[in-house]
Image (cartoon, rainbow, N blue to C red):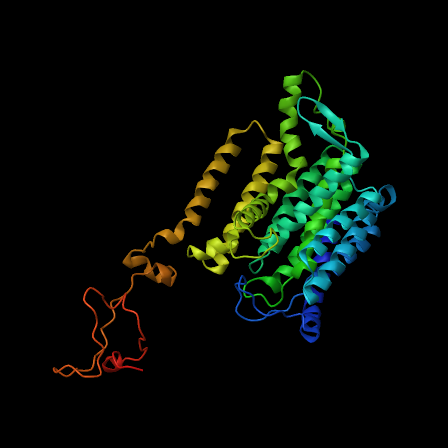
Length: 437
């Protein structure tokens, strides 16, 4: 654990220290696109934050290679090299997209090629554990297609959720933390060395996100861009592929005994084997809803819009920071709830805790629907939005002449001031409100 924490800290430090110079480089090179209709920020913000994250990845792998307890990962497995090769390719395409706005189909092709590069070097799914059936071996083509599909889905899910300051980095960090605990339990608890690469990938991914978050929290000084979002999505997918495709479920001894007992024992272990799909359930749902929504309107599935989940949170009244924290909450609830169930599947307290926290999450979602007001004695310690508004004195209005003015526009009957159409002055001189412009 100490070596993993050291790798995490080095990755975070390198990412954090390089983000500042990368921001200046992005401004100098003009990697500050104009504000688009779907954006929520108000000022042009530099991209290319993925450059610092990629060098953080390189630093983490380099440090791990020189640590005694983690050096065996590089000696016994080719997965770290496969990850670095695929990550370098997808990162390069992301950098070009942040600068020149590449076509969506070009990026999709690059994602598939990056996944294929990892498959060629051995980072692929070899088998799947099926509860009640056992280990099902996959053919080479089946494993390749499943690996490419998982990589593309994860990359695009992370890319779609990257719409608010600190949202994508925080959610992926939560996902990596939950996955790290699960992979470390498989590696250390069951003494299965094949789980060591996935544990290392998750630790490095946490460091990349933690090092970038201080620069990306609202108000963000730099965005990770596609060079960062596609990179962390690929690493998250590679972690899942490594532990799902390389760890033999028979080594966990979960398929022993009767079929019913084996199925019951396999469920808590089988669910976290696809943990990245559960911990990014929210962005994955956002991805599916976006494709259905755009296709239903006759648009391209890659056409950008303002219909994502984080946009909807802003529309119903949540602030920027609160919307991000709500997304954090649901991601952590799904990720760590799944992790806790995998450890103690027979505990009813876990189910009750998840149900209770889900109810809390629903209350937080609906918070803007009502305006709670604190009692008078507690107004000094609550935020201003929960205090009772004091009645303001009406502004003094100018005395209008009793005789109607010739220049005044008559208002039709049945039309009040709220529905009347016309120019309305912002000034306090109401005598000019009805004058023709």
